[in-house]
Length: 294
Image 1 (cartoon, helix red, strand yellow):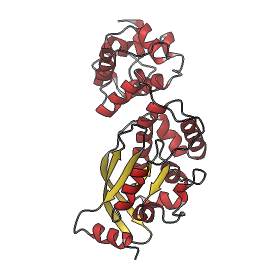
Image 2 (cartoon, one colour; image 1 turned 180 degrees about the vertical axis):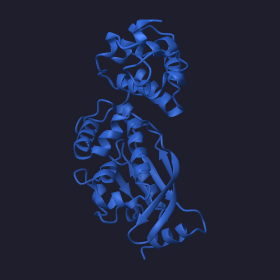
Image 3 (cartoon, helix red, strand yellow; image 1 turned 135 degrees about the vertical axis):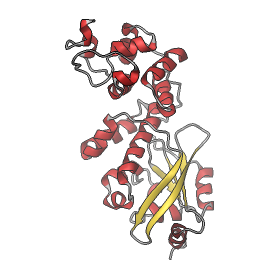
Image 4 (cartoon, rainbow, N blue to C red; image 1 turned 90 degrees about the vertical axis):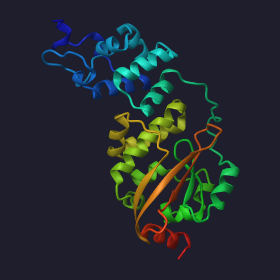
């Protein structure tokens, strides 16, 4: 039996990966046990999941290459290598897509440094045409760029309805979720909502990894919210496009609403978030009361 399977870790395990790709691979290695991965394990281990050399063996790459990949010294890994790593780590489709983005970053048209996001006029027009459907236009990092009256009443009636129009006063959906008392109390399944929000931000952020706005948002929330910092460090990723949420609204009580996320075709991270209730349900009646403005 090889000695490296016992107490002494290999030198490659002693340094922390410094890249987003390295941190993601490390987090997925920590999550999967040797038994689940089909790796023989002997004696006491110092790492909770797979060692780097074990992942390299499963994926059919050298430890040296995997180390260079994690440290950002190798760029644009081939599709075959990304697929091999994803299979070895047993990634789900969203995690696989996230790995692909990190390992083979595509050129992205960046906004001018310091320039605020501009809501697409056609998207704003669409929001207001959906008068009975609570809807908001989200920016790439969840700034609320616009909302219709129903969206404002459902999600943030305590805020100025015109707040999204000003880049300086524009609310941010994730900042509200972690730091705003009204928003914290709005979601019945708040732990699910926060986990989903952070996992979704992780997924989108991979496409804008060097954006100063993202760094400032993550830094602020990591300092002000231990909950956010813990979730962010977990490196979970999820592309959230539909599902259901339960609300405890201060004016109309409990609602269960389905949501859909419609990504704009420009690929700039902007998307429309809509909410709807099951026809004929108590939630539909409550939502109608809310959207009709009492």
